[in-house]
Length: 220
Picture 1: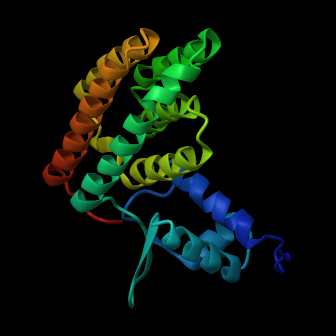
Picture 2: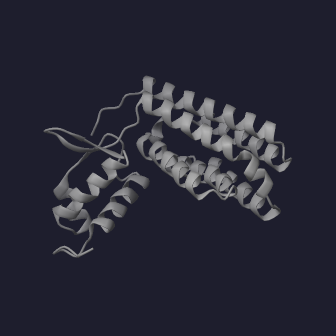
């Protein structure tokens, strides 16, 4: 891809904008101003617009006629659909995960599980590391297609859900639910691992949906 006159490409603009969402520099519901993004990333408006179209295709930003682009903000319907898809895929992978499990892989998962309660002052980081924990488990199944789909699902949930919605009580519950899932996987108990996965997804989906109905901050 050719460089534009200020030295950036659509690929670079796309990745940098997404990184800004990851680091909470752009928050769900925020209006995206072409020139502001172009100045911050030192590119022209053209790659910014192209990058936003790509992010719109991934459902991470949305375009409102006569208003422009906004960072996506998850809806109750999306929560239901995303968690249903996530549960179906994670449950499907359980037998392969247990079959491929090794001591080294289990250790990596346990290390990833610790971070959920280590970042009380950074809810965005907590949510992202929770996703990393689940993807570390999914990766063991060695199904690249499902892993890629799951990565997209987690990304949409993480980047479109406002981190301030996540309360301390839910974080403590997540830690316990992760331990139950890890214990079942470690015991190579497929039935129990599936139960723990479904229960964790159901609780998580309900929490996210309920938090949306309780808190509706003003869009920036």
